[in-house]
Amino acid sequence: MTFIHWLAGLSGQIFASACAMTILVLMLFMAVKLYKSYRRNRTYLLLVVILAVALLQNAAALGIACSAWTVAPYWQLARTFLDLLTFIIINFVFMKLYTGPAARLRGFPFLLMFVGLALVTAGQVAFTTSIADPAAGAQALAVDFYGLALTLVVLLNVRGIDHRFSYSASLIVYFMRQIAGLADNYVFHGDAPMLVILIRLLPVIYYTLLFLLLFEWVLERLLLTFQSSITDGLTSLYNRRHFTKKAEQLLRANKRAAIIFCDIDNFKKLNDTQGHHKADGVLKQVADILREETAGIGTAGRYGGEELLGLVAAPGVKPEAVAETIRSRVEKETMVTISVGVSLTRDGSSVAEAVRQADEAMYQSKTTGKNKVTLHASVRASKSRQTDSAAKPNAQA
Image (cartoon, rainbow, N blue to C red):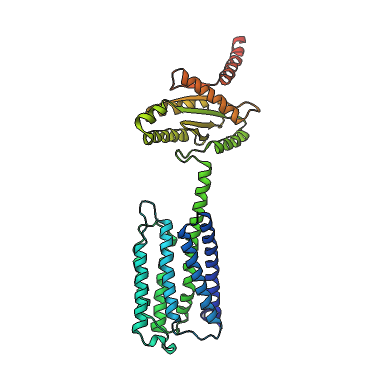
């Protein structure tokens, strides 16, 4: 027996069905987890139900193929109906998941698809006398071609969904499976082994692409959850807790670091006179400038309200120069100014202590005219000592 004949025979059908059912079980497991995790969302419940139906359908087809059971007269029609019902609901679910908020997906077109499927199936049963005869092959011409038209309609109307290769590819694979099934049912009648193999393997590819699509969705949700736990939702800077953690890591790696504490001047007045939307926009502008100026030499975070933090840990970079660049850019590029304080970590000091000192320096900027950079007293004292040390050798010379 050649490999082609093995795939076209019962062993090939068992192999293909086992692969499809394994993928369906994995998808069902993910769907159940999503349903439990996202407040019992009905979209996920619908996915759970339809995946369970698809799994049972594949299990029934495999059981019939492996046993000597007599196939019911309407089995093929029922299987085609369930295939198309599963296709409609699965596409509704995935379009619902991946459609952007700006283009809200409505269920009415999918309801029409289901109603059309029900009517065509009922018409097939009512007007085909030979469908109840097992010898007639239980062909369902009207339902088969309705399914073909249905797939084309969905394939040509995926503009609302985010462009996903896996999704478009799954529709193309499903369409190819339908074409191959029609050719085998109405032309070759099982006499073309390659076509039989194609019919069996294409569903495996189809479910694999859907699995990848669902897996991608789960990964995106996990990444969003992680991102929201470490960043501020408005400015996209690190939140205070994660900034402190990141700053401690950089401090351990570089031994010394500088904290730049920025506070937007007259922010409350801006909120009261121009509104929260305008104030939030300005806050984001300042945050972007801070992020750009600390990129590659440190990190940035939101301390709270209109207070932002920068950290400079790169050797050879003067933190007061970075702070002055940030202050100058904010003054030139936005409608506000900022008061800035700068502190340096000392041997054995913590990030929290450096932040407290930078806050004190910022307060001094705020109370002595605003829109300026002030070094903490400890930083000024350190620089003074360095200047004196450099001047003594020169004086002796």
